[in-house]
Image (cartoon, rainbow, N blue to C red; front, top):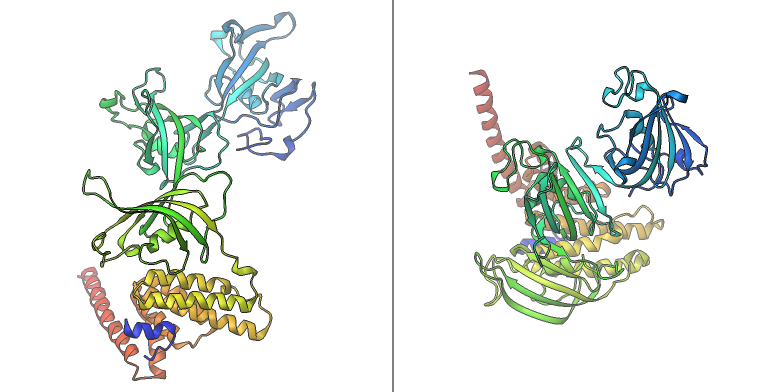
Length: 563
């Protein structure tokens, strides 16, 4: 097939804040009101639990199920001369710690607590059906069907959250909250100290990082040793200190672990100091480049993109064998880099992609596999064939590129044409992945053309858009990324349904994906237009071969079904 596009010629050459409802502490705008002393609330809306305000609390937060609440309280039953105290923490001489939902108090008491604020004091009246019912509480002399009265003061609480989809099996209690907002993902690196004990014991059985002078230990979150730690920490902000309670199925299970003296079916409590985290990014979603980003300095937020100018310091290393330390082969500072520009062989595609994820002043550890580094060729005497490169890089300065969206359509054309030309050079040199990156940047200003009203400018935009997507499809074809090749071809065919190059590349992509009948439709349509096109004939021959294999496999399956 005669493919004469830019690339065709090349190819031919090769915190929850606010009010909460009475059930689970969920947000309820109706609770945003100025409570006043003497106000009475019908907590469950059925008259069984009433709360009368004695002292107004602070703020808007209210506790939820599993929260550890610190309270002072006294409970009575009976009236007048028959009124009897049956429960109080006053004899203990200190505030009592109580976990909402633990069953230590009656149902109505829990419901009322979830409608109280820090510092609040209230009188509770609880019907027997929400107290101790027909059985009463004989140990405390509470008779059957007794109406209870409490005076309760909420001093403070610890937030305790139930990790979703664990059915209460993992609970996270915040001891020291953090001003940070970041929470880790499975792929991120976390720096933690933690120690473990049985829930009902005070003896620590195992610890990491709590020895004298020990630094927090680095883990990938997905590699933390217990499921409860992994799931719990995903709900914790960087810089916080928490405890994580883990039912046995999220700890050592039915067998326990004799090495750390954990018996079978034991519930554990972990004390965790979540000191820091590094997000780990995979810009290509294929593991070819992994970027571990250190903390951003100050309030910097702007990242680089195509056309941005950077000054970097970096150390390039090769991974050692076994326990061997990485071997440094390049250590530079003050290096000027233009993202998407001609930066010489020292700046690999993987390193350049890492720079696009960083802000000025930030550091990163970057792992670059050969397809984003020096490939099978290697580099001189430094990098061997198929070597993985490790970088430690600092983005010392960043000069952002102007936004293409603020340019006129003619300026956008100039911008896209420049990137497309660089993409063609990269493709000619065999740097397919670098070409992909350039073509993707080139098409960006013209991805959406509906807002262009002038007919001639819209036609120009569609031409650029189509050329870029055709070149992208050529690149994807070269690395056998059939799904993305199909997507790029479809974008061309949306506006140009008879484009021969898009139909041909789509046919090849469909063939690669095993969608033989769809591929046949595109390729036969092209054959009707030019029955002598060698590229189309070769693709059809490949299709027939694959179809024969598929038919034989189907025949074998049906033969077994009916034998």
